[in-house]
Length: 140
Image 1 (cartoon, rainbow, N blue to C red):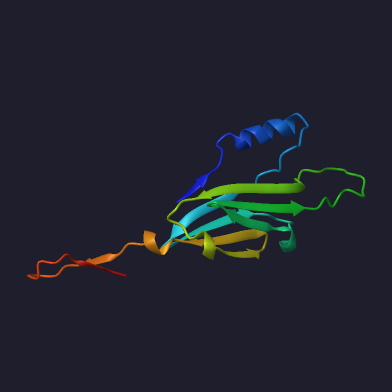
Image 2: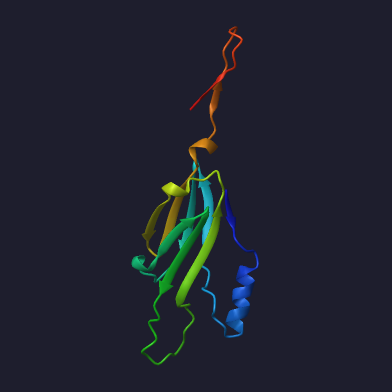
């Protein structure tokens, strides 16, 4: 199961942006859902180059970092609403997920991660034997 790291993180970032402070990287919008034995996570990263995306898993914590360059830095700014700079998001991966086999794909400004369930967390069928007095066996 996936869990967010800090329920107050978005509020803190909004407050920092309103006060003109930018010490912490901005968050990125995300959707997550289960598709069979895999959790699928989509992160919106429009305008981010694929080579600026960094994914790390350490102690069941998935960290996604990305960088969007400022296209207006050498120009006179008329309007600038799109956030630039560093983006970061952390998710706790439950013990039922396989952090070793995460796959990542980046297309059309959307980073898609697929996190499979760990083998030991998948449902298993238990066979029932009759008359031998021994316990049933778990089959995969």
